[in-house]
Length: 329
Image (cartoon, rainbow, N blue to C red; front, top):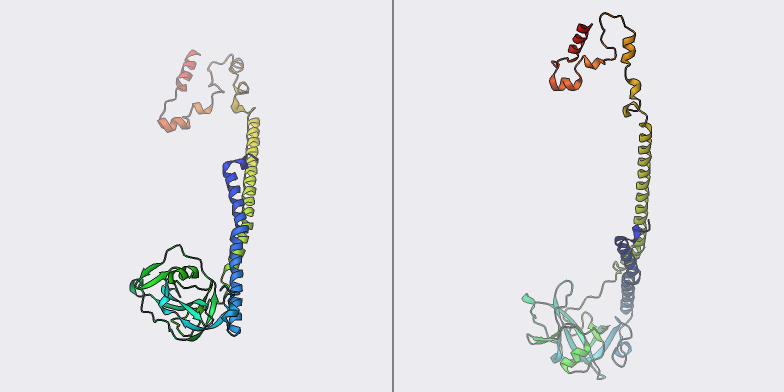
């Protein structure tokens, strides 16, 4: 039985089950559970941000321009630098491709932050539509603090009079416009000066990541159980096959033992042969011989085989033998 499960098919099956369970517990389930934790934390921060009043930008951002907590609402006073506008290229918003306007904003204290003014849908052929420039006078704006994005692998392009990028990376944009920017940026809230179409705030729902994580854990448990079931089924079927073979062997041996002394084997055929000599001694003075009593009845009638082959008109050859016996006596 052990040799059966050492075959390549079973060994590869076991390796697959072990690898699948390992990745389910260590990679796939934590991946979904961590995403759920991140969404829960994000929703909590958004709720706190809307419950609290906007804070001065110096309290939301550190001295190097990095955030303390994302999604906090910050307020700052200063003016836009509309001549240094950069477009975020073809970023989908509400399932529609669009362009987002990224404009530096210089505060009264001399710091410069990148502000995402919102988005506009694309024209036909994904071309840049008309975008109203940002105001260049002194304004006070409120927005949500956002973390900086990674630099995209695609290089920026110059098209239709705009510098276009594929990610909101402040270091890359600072090099393009030659303006020092804070590490993180601000996403403009609705009804603020310079706003185009405000970006929607993420929905405060958890999604299905928690259930997906539990599903991967369940799959990791079910895989070894399924393998054990297949092993048990294989052992059960092989035991059943051996039992059936043993029963067939016993039945065959019993049939051979029962038929060893039967008349059909020919071992006792002499006991069934008629004694013609004794019959002739009992009638020494008989003037007319009688028909042999040992002649089977089948000799006087056509057998089933002869009837099927010759019909009922087959000649009786024993009749000539009887006639010769009568002539002799």
